[in-house]
Image 1 (cartoon, rainbow, N blue to C red):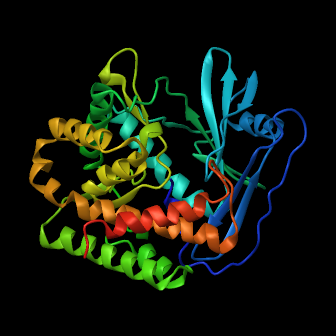
Image 2: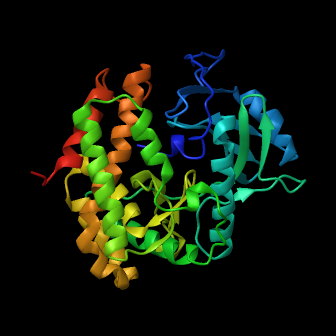
Length: 347
């Protein structure tokens, strides 16, 4: 579940209501209904494939086809064929443009450092994105590969090693002074101050967040650039060998504890049981053994990730958003699961 939807927007106070819109033609529904929690804003990104194809002229002289990909929570994407080359076009709303730009710059840096990650293609004028009436559009290089099978220790361990390599590469990234690169993250407290949730859930979230921040400081956990939302689908394992394995979807890069990325994978794979998270962590530690002493505090960061989940689902309930996979009560179940995660082992 993505958590970057309020990062970079916490100081804005716009207020509007979004709708589910429907396009026309085959494969017509190309919509992302978008919620930015703190601002109480619904964002709707709507674009037809033919409009994207026209916009791609800023990058490509030839476009053979533009095919919608499976809908995400925060963006619309299309597979682009241009001769023998394949790309992915990605559209986010205007309020997410800054975060997308940050992620593209980071992906560009990581690719130049040897890490496959779906690097951006700059326009012929050198731009990372272009503005459309619907939002900001980027073109990414297509990365072949498949997500790890969560029942395979070897494949999940490979994904863990990819994350460790990414963390090593990002040590040298020249991060600026944007709020996303300052730890502790101010958006968490702002969300907890404004998002409607029960007193019980809010108290658990505040307690879990405070414990995570304290653990990071008291135990000198490594703070660096992180992906911030690595789930199984963020990893693409190559058929040509582990050296070509990729970490994609750099939409919400942050500066925070390295353990937070491990915690995110643990939370996002929870439905399959604890083994995937264990194999992932073991793979990570093989590539970065110095993380070993810090792993004793992984539980605190897992609870911090559950805080982000609680904010997300509470926000969707508050605004009546039910888009996404799952039954009608997905938001309520998600919030209940987040509460269980935040309170696991307490009291």
